[in-house]
Image 1 (cartoon, helix red, strand yellow):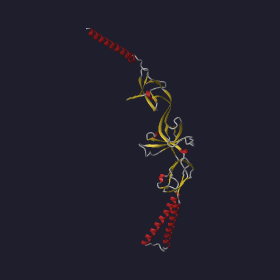
Image 2 (cartoon, helix red, strand yellow):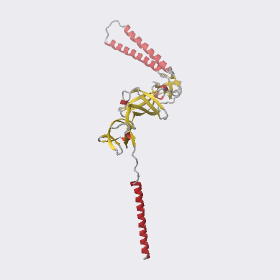
Image 3 (cartoon, rainbow, N blue to C red):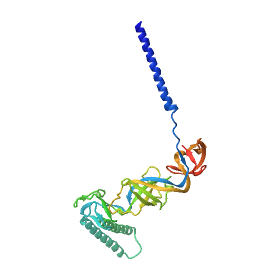
Image 4 (cartoon, rainbow, N blue to C red):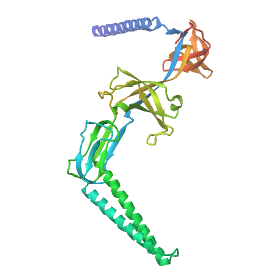
Length: 340
């Protein structure tokens, strides 16, 4: 009997504690949810000022004056006059091949040409009339061909001798030198190259697709931010926009060259391949009404904002849009307050 009463009292106590817990949780819910103060709506006022639409394109530094030199034929390297990092002048000798065999080949071709020319003249000197038999015509044609070939061989030998010496076509810095040791035979000319760049002719290159390039024009001002110098702004102007699209790009994109203004690159601060972003101002509106973009909503009837303390929907006409702001053409006045 006593055990039954204890069990009964324990059950009642647990049920009572459960009711208290439910009451406390309900009170907290009412306090935090139902009676909690509502967050104030964000608001702003319509302002008047200048708006600019910007286009940002990524690119890298390139150079206008850049030359990759290599021999046109193989041979033994006789002279190598530069190393990577050297400054060279326009017309300076960079390297040359052994010319002994080339000069001998030229002398032989010149002798062959003289002999062919003599045979050719001998044929005509021995003729007394204008008539020509079939066999004589064949002989004359063969002599003409022989002389012409000998002449072409001389021209080729002269060109080979000329190309045995590499000259720098520009003034600039040697940025690559893969020439072998002097006395080494060069079998593949492409494996023995010297690359020269003029640091004073660098420009910033970007690619603009067909929807972007229509808003750009030569002479347009540009602001460049290089990844290597994030706190520094470099000013420039568009020097040229390609008429034909790049062939090695996905999609239709055009190369835009940006000339850097008042740039001293004598210490090679700006180097080829440095990447960054170029920002173009594509359109500017002066003395326009505008507000932050986030306050403008849209539905099937157009663009609208919430006005007044009752947040009444007001339809508006918009204009120029930037990353953060939008122009108001109709429906609002300067100083009007709108809500998010």
